[in-house]
Length: 178
Image 1 (cartoon, helix red, strand yellow):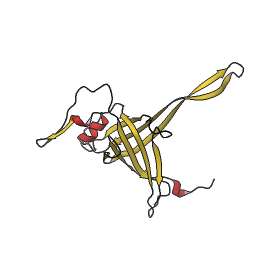
Image 2: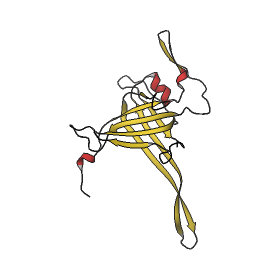
Image 3: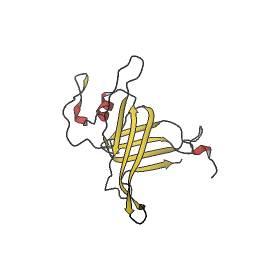
């Protein structure tokens, strides 16, 4: 296979989150980009005659997206800590995030990440988009306020299947070429 240097993808992405693709908002800058993981869990079907697996089946899939939200806004903290939008109130010149007991059912959101696609060069811009219809911020998240560093909110989204999207239950990856 010949090496095509324009297929090497370099660059940052932009993350949009909302209740749907229509209401998704740009969360601002990220730190260290975004990591998308696809983790299949395979199970061996063993038979005595082989002493090994006669067949391997896919038992389950775990899809996740990890990033750090580099802008220390209360809107981003709300996303990282998986609070509903109703917990953030802007009134009387103050923006307040109420931290209280959460529902046992986590807040599901839409997620879109855009960045460079293969073939992007200094003169040609091509776009890759990851789109997921159901994500939940589901891991621990903490942040520090340091004198000489930005406050970044680590967030990990678990991508859940959307049964209404037959064949694309976990979402889509699109490369758009002008």
